[in-house]
Length: 102
Image (cartoon, rainbow, N blue to C red; front, side, top):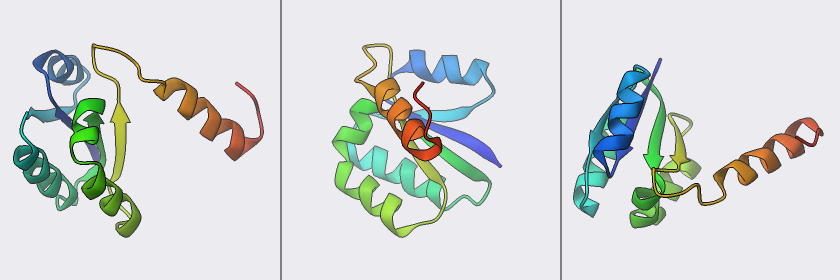
């Protein structure tokens, strides 16, 4: 199983590539949906990483994938422009799941 990145900028893609994660850079809504469909239908992909800007661009479709498919896991990541509170949300999820405050 592997991770796959769908990003809106080259910097994020290059950083993930250094970590061994393949991905694509897209900018238009149709490109995002095409890349997402390709990743979701690839049985070797366990986690799809998407930058915040792209998840905002296609939020309804992404929510549909999250609610109606068991895999892959679709994860929103911050890009180089900010963190958008992701770390706080993750800490909250972990706290709720295991009962420990991080």
